[in-house]
Image 1: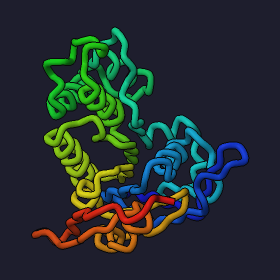
Image 2: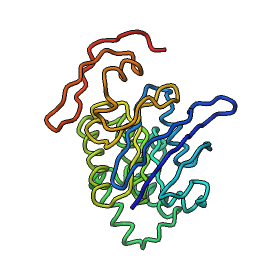
Image 3: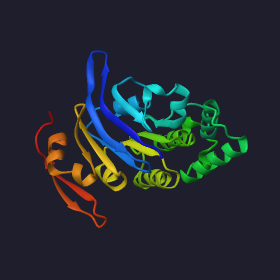
Length: 261
């Protein structure tokens, strides 16, 4: 049973602090936490701290064990991150990139087992016909799906996703998030996703954390976080919020309220 917790987390670039004393209720096994907030609010920085790309103070713990107590190899086996930028343009083919990355990570799989895992991912992501096409010939959306495959091939306990649907059309936005939800339901583990789309956040995330200027504004269920007051304070918009058939908040932005601070 995987559990991820953040208590009093602060992060700085040099002397400039960008995350201020953030505490988020524990993300329990099978749950997806959504990080919301405007550009430059600190979502990506928080994900980089969770992936150990950037140091943080406070306590980040996986299964009750502090991040500092994990060796690098153990942490990277347990935690996989999908960055916001898709894989760089190159002559490599998607299957070559995913295969070589998996072998570098030493996942302990036979060639047959690894091949079956990659084939399953490519089939689920609609990449079968493009598996042998040079990355440089793929659209940004397709390369973003390859980036998702790079994270998923590791079968991590913790999946960190930074704007994973930003380059995707509506079908693949929903399909990718369906894959994440299905994986958490069947395999377990936890997920953390930075996302701008409030509908995606309400539809797929068990818990949300709303961040503004590096500070936590609200954390809880979608209904607790996506309120008119919170959206006005963070996004500077007037909104109307109703409830859909599944009991989730349905946000309709009415107008810009005032210039953001």
